[in-house]
Image 1: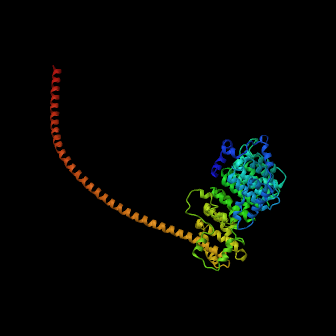
Image 2: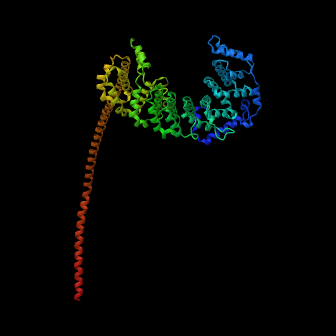
Image 3: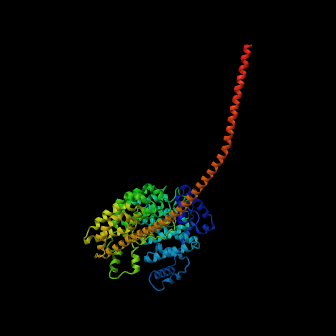
Amino acid sequence: MSLEERRRFCRAPPEQRRRFCRELLAGWASSPERRRRVLVPLPPQLRPRRSSRLASAWQPQEGVLRGICAVLEAHVSPNPDQARSWQQLHYPDLNNYLVFLLARGQGCCFEVRQAAGLLLKNNVIADSVSIPPSSQQYIKSELLPCIGATDRAIRSAVGTVISVLFQIFQFAGWFELFQALEQCLYSDNLDQMEGAIDVLYKICEDVPEQLDVDVPGLPKPPIDVFMPRMLQFFQSPHASLRKLSLGCINQYILVMPLEPYVSIGQYLQGLSVLVKDPSANVRKMVCSASVQLIETWRDVMEPHLKNITEMILKASKDSDDEVALEACKFWLAYCNCGLTEGLREFLPRLIPTLVSNMVCTDDDESLTDAEEDEPFPDRDQDIDDDNESFTDHDDDDDDDDESLADAEDDDYGVNAANLRRCSAAVLDVLSNGFGEDILPTLMPSIQETLGRTDDESWKEREAAVLSLGVVAGVCLDGLYPYLQKMFADVLFPYLDDKFPLLRDTTRWTLSQYCESMVEEVDKLRAELIKADKLKEEAVAELDRVKVERKFLCDWLWSQVHSLKASLAKRDDEAVALKRPLEERTDESEGWKSRFEAVKRACDEVAAEAAKRRRLD
């Protein structure tokens, strides 16, 4: 199962994960390959006793054992025939002899016993199917008592072989292993507890999902038995147990969720206690765990980010550089997960811590390189390397957002870097995320530091100059008010300082500003070219508009003249039509007067006739 498949499997609901594991185990247990590789029944009441008799019946032959010991001694001792020594190991039951030497070879040196364990592990990996069932049972029975061996190297070798065998059998095919681990974990013997956690750590490295499956004979998954005990070890007085238990849980949560076996709050509470642990290794693993949590279970961790941030902020000030380096990796992971804005309220405390961590130590390679290169003139490749010495961005990498998830390993070279470089990388990421908003916090401390002139403070001044170079590319506009005074009064005089590293860092910082200023000039030049081009286009457009407007005016003028001529013609036609109408009007007036005269005559005749009738 690939890492991505494991993560998808872990994000599924618990019931779905368990059903998938049951189906997977059921199908694998019924396969012919499974029947060839594993012994059958698991629960104690069903385990056959015949295998135990076979295991106890096998005894090594003294001559063969001496021969194998001689070959292993020749292998661990430097000699020209070392590569050919393995070829002499052609013995029957070789794996039985190897596990015998590993588990019971008290008379042999530890190197020989470790070599036997290494060879046994390689044989199991190479061809586990060819190992007879009786030999398998003997190997398993001999390994289990050695989980709590007094010698740590032997415990480690035994744990390695057990983890390889576990990938073949799991707890379903090796139930005695679960019982042995449980017994050792809950014992009071330090060696047994360390050995059990070491085995679980190696299992979590290879197949952590096998701890979260149902096993016949167990009422709950094995991780539900182991996890509470490992959390109890967080409060153990033994630093080794605290470290091993935390490392084991860290390996488990890479692909598997903590819940429902333990709450996130309970786990984080344990981390908050361990971050103050007197052991630097434990504190370092707390920071590593925080990085894994935010990278793997970001959605689950979002409600707890403020508490985690407070915890890591304290770890960033740790007196141990390795602890502080792991804490710095957390800030990179935090920003690469797209959560940069959540750090805004912590900037007043985070930025001074980063600048303080950028102060070089006496054994810093930058200090050594500057002193060694001082007598020699710079070559072209040296100058190119110096320009990318503190933050190594890759502008050509446009693959996808997955490059951000690996920024602390690839873009900033954290794996090969020290606290100084990693802190500079974090400051660079913050400047890209917040821009000029970091300057009110950054500049007062830088100005105060650069105001000092004593020789004892030259490393702090060099870190301040380095900080100015780191933020130059993004915060140039906000830095303009400070540049004139800093360049003239501080940076230029530092070019002749008596400390080589301060001179080198000043040159690098000035190069960053020169590069940024050149980029600004290039931008202005490009804008001027663009403005000239726009001006030419505007003039051409204006000329075109003028031509079109003149053409339009001429056309309108011609249309007006045409319209005037048309109106004059229509006026003449109207006059011509009006004249006959006027003549007819005169005629009608004449006829109207005649009609009225006749009407009056008629009225007079009618009146006269009426008068006569009255008289008659």
